[in-house]
Length: 312
Ligand SMILES: NC(=O)c1ccc[n+]([C@@H]2O[C@H](COP(=O)([O-])OP(=O)(O)OC[C@H]3O[C@@H](n4cnc5c(N)ncnc54)[C@H](OP(=O)(O)O)[C@@H]3O)[C@@H](O)[C@H]2O)c1
Image (tube, rainbow, N blue to C red):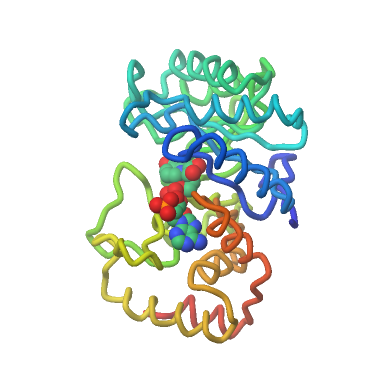
């Protein structure tokens, strides 16, 4: 799999990242290992988790995804071959939703222990915290980088103006700065007045920021949880806007033209976009993973990209 440099960092991440959110909870250990091994066999090296995954699944409390990844890394003896990303900021049992210096330091230590590694390659602020001074948050992340606990930092669920505010603070103080933003991003757009809160969805403002600052968007919920194609689920109401029918129709047309599936067209559209985008693929089966990896082979012409971009 092709790799790309992650913005201003020195990380060479594979074109598709792998979401490990449900590994160790909804997705059983054996299947999780199989999916991780298949992703690595395809050349993938960018694995995404968080301290809270997946506490909302009945019977679990969070940290299970990191623990599973830690055990998998030990069993495979392959730590140095992967770029491991984790996050802090959302609440889970016993931990507040916040980005105070104390929470950042404590949660990083817990994540390192669960993952069984010395350094997290990419550590995200999982969601913006307007109640903690951004200065405190950025100083705390910088402390982790200087201590060698974290190599690079990223933001998730941040608006473009806050990314720029963070950049200003980091520059003025000589601190580490965010090198990418992980945002909710799919082909369909949230309708005017729609919301995905507390998750922040990509928007034209972010696309412009990303392109001009070479600030990659790591895209999550790319396939809307399978809603594009799985008959037992439907497109979320917040995405059913004036343009959604036209956009769903063009997806079908381009899929027919290219011989790709609808899911593959969504992922390929991101890979061809004008702003640097690294889609996180997620799967609960071999078939889903292979289909999603297959998006790497889908070539979209300039004309097809234009029709996809402009459908409304
Ligand atoms: N930063 C954040 O706030 C944030 C938020 C959410 C997620 N994330 C990250 O992003 C990753 C992906 O998120 P997500 O799970 O929401 O992604 P998604 O791509 O929207 O949904 C993945 C789900 O879609 C279905 N699916 C996947 N491939 C399919 C295919 N080829 N055909 C049909 N259905 C398919 C599967 O559902 P079934 O298993 O039900 O079949 C799969 O579990 C997570 O693992 C996590 O690392 C980050």
